[in-house]
Image (cartoon, rainbow, N blue to C red; front, side):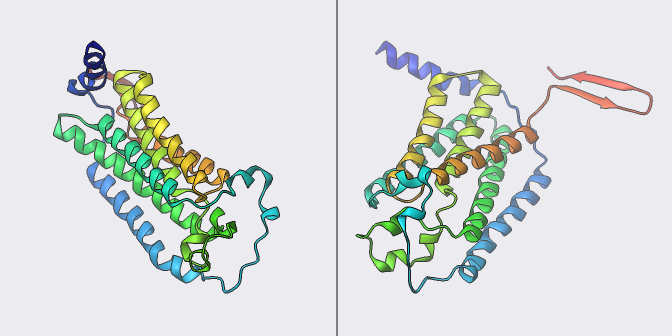
Length: 250
């Protein structure tokens, strides 16, 4: 029972503290979100125009790079579903870290999170459209021709799941760390569930290893840049024509 109480203190007490690190210009943020969303949604149309269902496939496993051949697994809808569940855990854990009792702070956190999610989604979707890489399951002889010839079968590079969960985990831990310091348990939950998602995507024959690795790097990078851009700085420097002003907000 004592261990349960200790776990409760570790996870929930920091959320009672009123602290924040993001400064958000709401108008600027909404413009960014609207623009990124337009780019994201436009892909739904152009993807159909640029990707045509193949009438005949001649795929050779030998053409798959040696470092990606571990991705040539048998297709598994069960593991695919589990990858969704672990993604939900990663995103839910991130929202837990971003939660604040102060509604204004919470709103700012959600704006930053929205910027990250939409930006990484737009970049990933357009990359998929232009790369048109076949998913590993197309090499599985058991998979039906109808499934192989779906437009989605050419969306392997890079992994949207991996990009999304690592972007979420990075933003969640970035916020938590700058408010409360390192926490092994929180970090393990965030990046553990993100890593599980990436591994399950490979095991389910949805992606090659390079797809999920690139997704993790790009998603984390986008998240870090946006978080850094919005980070509140207590120490501020301002330079005038003949003066340098230093201010510190307690």
